[in-house]
Image 1 (cartoon, helix red, strand yellow):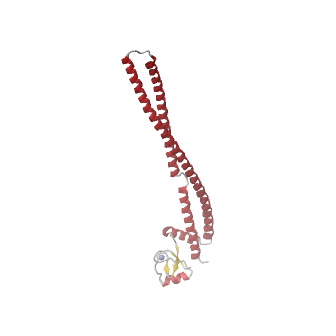
Image 2: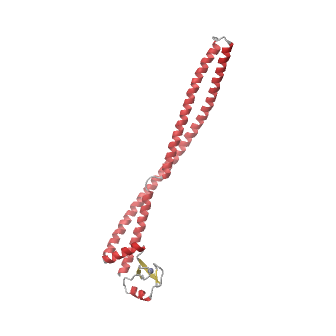
Image 3: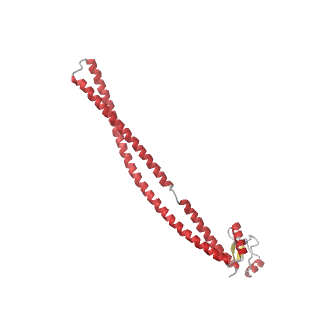
Length: 231
Ligand SMILES: [Zn+2]
């Protein structure tokens, strides 16, 4: 096999390697924490904190209602117990009881409102927990797929490297080095010649160059410098 064809094959292996390595680095960037899951977890934590705050407010209102109920009972006992005879004092006590009852009504309304807020928050948390479980399961599945795809690609890369080594071993090391340097500079080092045109720079090659290529020589395009390969 002539050396240019061997270099062309070496380059095909190189291109496959580059593509596999690029996919590998894309996969590597997708492995790890999911922003969507992290965000959903943070939101759920916040909802829990808000629920605890609502419950705390509800409990504190309930305690105040209990206090007021005790005060009202004590005052009503005084009011109807007959121990107070002074009409002014009675009226003032009556007013005090009414004020306490008004405050208690207001608190009872607020407590009802809090209770319905607590219920809503609990339903919301249950829904969000389910959503989060779904997201976490999806993410885990995706991570597993990525990991197995990564393993598959790693074994392809190692096969390709092996192939590269055995191909390169049958070519003069200086030629391999020349090819590698050229590939580094140009992206592709070996290009096909089709209908007398260099596929690297799309220029029509002079007849003398075409004749040299047919002679199985390693010929570089006089325009772009790439190695010319006549398939
Ligand atoms: Zn060219």
